[in-house]
Length: 129
Image (cartoon, rainbow, N blue to C red):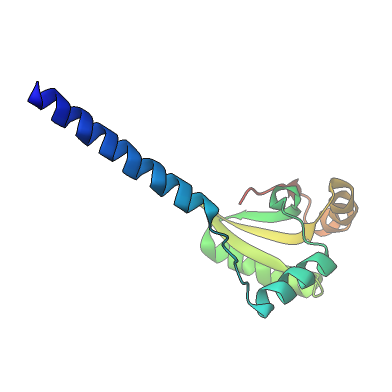
């Protein structure tokens, strides 16, 4: 009998302690201060029109092959299209030369026409990051 009383006493004490912790933790207001630099960067991001959907960026793949050949193709690409930005990525087993960043497929198609004159094997891709 005494054991049951002690068990009930411990259970009630535990529940009482637990319920007060829940009540106290829910009444406090937390203010989060963000540095001014973060606010300015968020403003700049909005002005530039960046969106969260990085998956919707299209690129034109110029070449896919070995490292030496890809570097050679990139030098040739710079000579033919000096105003374009490009990148070389490694995706097993090949290096890939990709140019441009286009928000729409239509915009990428327009630029693909000019590139296909020099690189008939070029194609539009939508790389996932």
